[in-house]
Length: 447
Image (tube, rainbow, N blue to C red; front, side, top):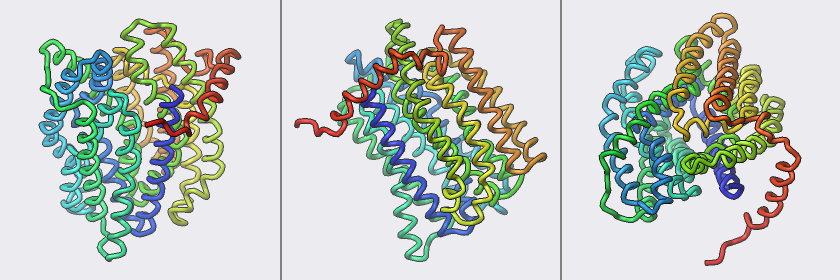
């Protein structure tokens, strides 16, 4: 667990740093309004793109991981093929959703050129394929390969392209977005090649019963993912629609800095999900609780110091984007408070996603999405972007409390401070494991 968590954390740190550099470059090379439109379009793409998987990306992580460890690569290939076909079929209604979002929020043909809508629509299946391939590589224990595309190349490729376009005098909203989408195509192709090299070129097996089971999981999860992406990005969409793109750019920048607080929590969750799926399949309750305690300890020990650094030094970080962005410091501090509740909750969402609790998860996310849709506009009316941030932070805290309650009631598991993460024996064991593994993390394996 520790080695995988360190690998994932490293990838997320590197990816976050690259994304920071990429967005700073765009903010400096474009006007504030043009930068706001690019980031608004990317936000819409990150919400709608994964939905083209129709929840089969979650089914891949849950069932594909089991297939791989059961020595059934043909069944995994069958699920992968089904998911790829689904992405193609759902991209057309996804494009209509993208158009409807831009039309309702900003107006297509006025604030948003048709070319921007077309580029985002083309990116939908590519983003969905990237998300599916990442989960597939995680399922076959290729953790590093799984996060290389999403965390590193997703920012590196469009960042280099933006610099080249700026030097040539061709950098615009459209060319910046086109570079981002071309990067998604490269990532999808590279990950497909890695999957083929790992799994092999096998005849896919799609058992009728198992196919039914895939969609039994996928149907509620696609709604859960849609709601989850809205909860994570919907406040940006609402700020842009109710205020303006400049306010949305400042708010989005503060939001992306605030979520740095939970990047180790995300690394812990991503590491634990396959382990949770396997231990739940083995009915290993003590093992599940031990995972929750260890994950909660890692989340707390890293997340809280990061929160203090982000809140205290946020003014300087925002200044990297330009003087106008420093007005978002109050927004950053408020959003950081909300993210601290995610740190305290620990890896609770990993349990809900991997133990068949899709419906309760969806119910909480539906309530959270509805709450966000009401709280952010109300906050904007009362206090502008700061009010929007307060509404979003309250919804985040309420969601985390609900997740903890469901996990305790339905599974008998405790996450966060109540998980036993501060037990002296556990702390000593984790410290001993960390000290023992540190040398191996930097040791080059023998060929």
